[in-house]
Every structure is written in structure tokens, then in C-alpha cells.
Image (cartoon, rainbow, N blue to C red; front, top):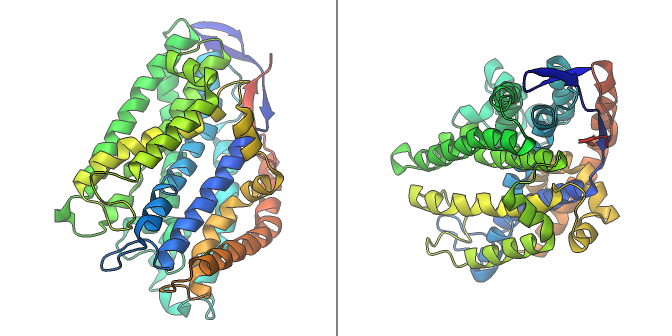
Length: 413
């Protein structure tokens, strides 16, 4: 196989799949944080409208879990863009074609999601029963993850799945973005120079997402505007992951960029900085901490750069080639956390239904709510993973390369 580097055909550099347990571990922590914040909200601990929340506990719960979904988005950006980044920056082999890419993504997300959708929409004993189905196109939008674009289009029990529209949009746009970045980097002479060229449009994506997110929270659009959950408002976090994939691929090729080299020297310190920023964030001068109220434009303008920075600081040490903090590795690689990471997608899908099943809305017993929701989501996820997800993942080899277990491409040295 050959790859074109600076206009000259050269042998493509071979890659192999490698398992990075730290990425699985932080995915697990992120999903547990998602479940925690939603359980806390249901139990009245997080403020909302006339519900005051539980003082400083509400602030700590909200500030220390708010980056959970952004981390999941950034992980998608990193893991999915990294093969493309290695090809553009290091001249690595192209691991799969467009058809196999689409096939792999569909098998990863749709089977488990469809199981939830069918139960939520068509099982009378579940939630509100079949009255949730208001028509054929309503059902189609839900099944194709396009329900976020219609006000009131998300079924009860599936409220957290609005984020799936962002994932789908990213999957569709990524090959086009990767092609553009590849062309943009082609004229550069070194891995570092190629990375710099790619980072420029990635930074533009972050700025566009930031601007759209601020605009979509304008009071004139009404409370909880549907626009605020459109993909473009969240693409900045995906772009953070793409930026880390670019930095990582460049470093693996010998093209270390200054900020990334600093993170490689102090990986544990990076997490310490993120912790310090989060503590200070608890005392935000904007005053919205500890609540689930829709933020104003001013709050979004203040909060989002901090959120983006924290996500970057938390994930960056996990992406540096051949460098790991012993503390971070010890935290993220424990076996229970690794297993939760494996079934984390289904836990994310089923935790809101668990809140409805146990009728936890309005309870004030936070420990009980956390136990019931985490436990129920875990049990449902185990069934989903072994009965639906894992069999579906075994089909990935039917079209292009694919493995059941997660792996990340790295250069063969």
C-alpha cells in the first residue's frame, strides 16, 4: 500500500490496533457522572426553577459532573478522527473505507438504541405507554435519532438521547472534514507543520460552536430553546477530541508541539490544574452553579471556554504517546471501572428510564436515588451488552476491519 506524502508516493506506514485502558476508564467515569447528575436532579438536590437545590452540595454535584457529556463527545472526536490524523500527518495506511466506516458506526450505536426506543415507545407497562407514539414520522425521527430537531419530539424516558443527534451529525461530517484536513496538510513538510495546519480549522469549529451555543440561549428564543441542543452547539467538544488526535498523531511521528510536550512532562499536574479550576468554578461570579436552569447567553459565554479547557486538561494526558501518570493509570484501570466502560453506552441509554421506573422525581433521598438508578442502569446495560451490543459488534468484520473489543490505531515502529 502507498500513501502520497508531499506529492511523492511512499510506502504507507503500517498501523495496529492497541487497547488504551485509560480511555475506557474515563469513559466509565463520565457515564457514572452523567447518571449522578441526573439522579441528583430527580432527587431535588440540583436547583431548577422554583426548586432551590441543596446548597453547597448542589454546587459540588453540578460543577464536578457537568463535564461528563462533553468528555464523551471529546472521546468520540479523538477516537474516530485519530486514524485519519495518522494518515494525514504520518502517512499511515488507510485502515478502512467509507462503507466500512458507516457500517461500524451503525453497528456500534443503533442496536442498543433501538432496543430502548422500542421499549419506551411501544411497551404499555413502561412509562406512559403507547400514547407516546403520535404518528409515523414521529417514530421515524426517534428511530433515526433526529428527534432533537423538533420541539417536544423526545419521548419520556429518552430525554438524554438528544445527544445522539450530535453523534450522528459528527459521524456523517467526519469523512468530509478529514478529507479537507488531509488536503490542507498535504503541502506541509513536517509532521508538526501538518498538525498546525489541521489545528487551524479545528479551532474555527470550536469558535463557531461557541458562537452558536451563545446565540441559541438568547432569551428571545424562549426558555429551553430546541436550538441549544442542536449538534453545532456541541461540536466544540468534538473538536477538542479532534485536536488531541492531531497532537497525538504528530507527537507519535516525532512532531511534538509545545503545549503537548508540556502535558507529556507533567501528566498528573494536568489533572491537578483541572481540579483546581473546577474548585474555583464552584464560585463562579455568574451565579448559575448548582442549578439545571437553562443558562443565559452571558452565562454560556463565560462557562463554555472553562468547560472546553477542563475537558482538554482531563483528556490530554491520556492521549500522549507512551506517557502515563502512575496515579491516573491506577485510578482509570481498575477492573470494575473497565467493565463499566465496556457497557457504558447502555448505562447511558437506560439510566433515565430507571428514574421513571422507580418514580424518583421529587424524592429527597439522594443515596437511595443514586443506588437505584446506578444499579438498575448497570443491570439493564449488562443484558443489553451481551444480548444485543456484543452480537452486533461481531458483525463488524462482515464489511471492513473491525474488532469486538475497543482499540485505537497506533503506528508500528
